[in-house]
Length: 369
Image: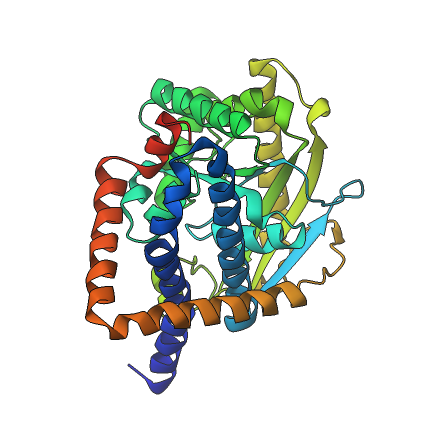
């Protein structure tokens, strides 16, 4: 390992460590006592409100860590009719890497949606320590992807739970179902040839059932669909970002995001027409990405549209940095006392066991919390 590689490893670890420690501290020290507010129905609103504030502060920390600490540039372009705002939104996006949630937080930071943003993710992620606990508590929707009927039923139940709660929410769904990889592209291409569909090189054919279920059940509470096309300028050509490359400090120099807004009233109401609409968007993404990656050198990658006016996120980023530093520092200082070490250990084990074998999200839905 060269000195440069060692420095990059250190960079990667220093990027990940504060995010992980802050999330762990909040889950262990804030939410167990806060959950007492769930016992009585009149106080449940305050639990949800405080939870959204804590998640909001952490999401801004995650966004600034990508933009400030890794120095990754987030370049967002819009079509001529699109303006971003703090509205209840269904974000749909292609899924080029496992880490697409991170630039999505940078986008939501610019339209003040971090507090209410939730995502649809794979069920196995509920077992991830710390992250899995937080995603379940935040009412992210976990899908198995192998049982369509079960997934659609769970989606419907989660959307109804959201509507009944009276809390504002926006959702991120990746209809491809998994991150793009050479193996997934080859599998998708084989499927396309058998079905007589267009063969894609840069995206996967979308699975539309989840998108349709979310839109149909949430239509009355959603204002718009934001169609996101995401493209990465890789650290080195052909080096797709992943968790290990981030830990090695090999961050993408630029993440491009093209956004097109569709008012909810513009979308079809019939399921088959919605599926066709979604597939048309993916055909557009394939054409856009093909042009972007092939029209010039890798370093000059661009997506079409007008640049998003630079949002003033400086204050929010600084505020999040200060709040997270103070809170995390305080909670870590408690670990100088053995009773707090025992408490933190018990809480961590409890979160992991309940999250893996029961499901915090399932409990919240079942108990109508």
